[in-house]
Length: 191
Image (cartoon, rainbow, N blue to C red; front, side):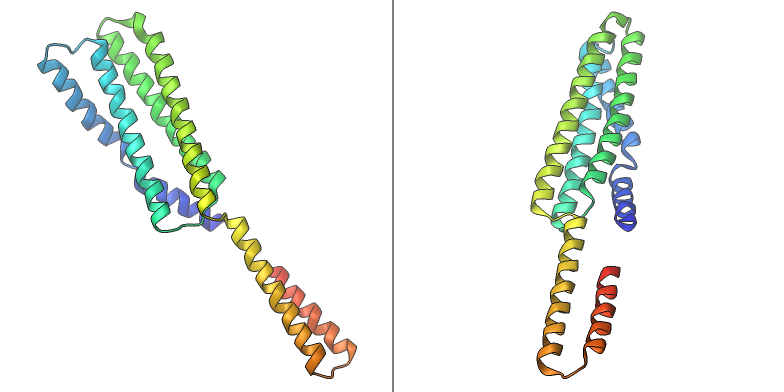
């Protein structure tokens, strides 16, 4: 399980590691666009800046989920969901701070509460989207626990077949058969 969590952490770092520099680039483009139109100190500009955060996170979420689907990875779905929610929280907290700072600089501090509610609503929508995507993909792919249980059942069936063969084809006394059974059960329990 620990290896799978490390894989998830690595996967998320790869897909989300450079998100803030990309958001800053996108925000600079949006700001420049509103400056060129003469609307740098507007709520429309603030909305545009927030949209950069939302869009970048959504695109990266879609890429990581596509990566998982295409490679048919079997993961710890609840851990993946928790980590994605944490990432969403971090990004949306930064988005809220950026919006507040922009509104203060634009002389519109009275709009902060409205934008704050808007960001919180978008964050909740993203949490719901993450949960839905995880639920859908996990329905298509077995969890690690299910895979381990399937392996365990396979080895138990193998053990039963070997034991049946030994009982029907070989003449061993009961002690040897019991020792072999105990050894095989011990091996299976370690899987």
